[in-house]
Length: 200
Length: 233
Ligand SMILES: [Fe+3]
Image (tube, rainbow over all chains, first blue to last red; front, side):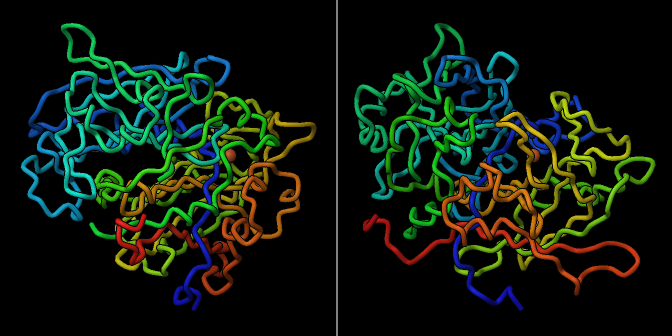
């Protein structure tokens, strides 16, 4: 039985293609239901509710209308809704995952809570951040990046921001709009001000 | 949390820029990806189980009033990690063209008929052994504008979560012996021939159901944890 054989490697990635919307982000436009929305909010969630929004651009600066973004994050106490994170989770129904397709002008948005600090491999706190995966036509494998918050003092000591060249860090930091619980972060897939993507 | 997913496994994936695939030219990063140590944020991942899947979501032939046109098929296999362990409770989502090679997506302009009895989307959750199963219609090949006379080999798009955010996989399942393989820049964006072969399902006579449906087997292999302490990364 082939199940007992050790595989000779992982299944390679292929592009999500231009037609994922009806299957992955139908949003009422097709005869299929959404498994996920662009919100992580649950009735029992605690913490500061925030909206993160922006646009996605290609190497010519043209808005990308067919990208899918997925976020994964800790709760406001810095804990993950995953059995691998053994620490107790006070928000029992909070999942920390959301999915959003860009619209015709490349806009995306997520409604979530600001995550708490999560330890790095040495146990030191990282600055609050959200992990972001970017999928799209023309992208043979999805890209990984992070969203940090402009009003967090911890950014200066964050171990992941520290490995990013100083002149590129701003591409990872969502800017808080004055007087609103809204953060703005545009993604640039290519070019001089290209978003930092990580090799994980 | 003392183990990591080796990044070497990622060598099976295509490089971001694959110029033969024209859409990659303006969408692939120019700058190298930045290596970083995996933290809890990368090592954990969303857990979505049976509550996310409705009864019947894994049968794409029974979502409408009538039966879709085309060749009914069973697609099944195991989700495993690269060490051969089954990956249980993993959400598997699929989407595909109908038997004529037409997607229900509004931007698909291929002049082939839509099928009122086929949407082409499904989802399921792998069981305790990592096993999953769909019933669907064999998708048709379809033309695309990448180059003159460009046709995609028949394929089913798949999305799999695995057990951490870095095991996330979106791929395409192909059918054995497709004559379009040598001409498809997306299939051939995977540099290693053995790795390309892992995207091709195999005909499964043993699980073909007499008088009802051919069966194709597609095992999905996700990144696995090895015993390398994080400090050595
Ligand atoms: Fe396709």
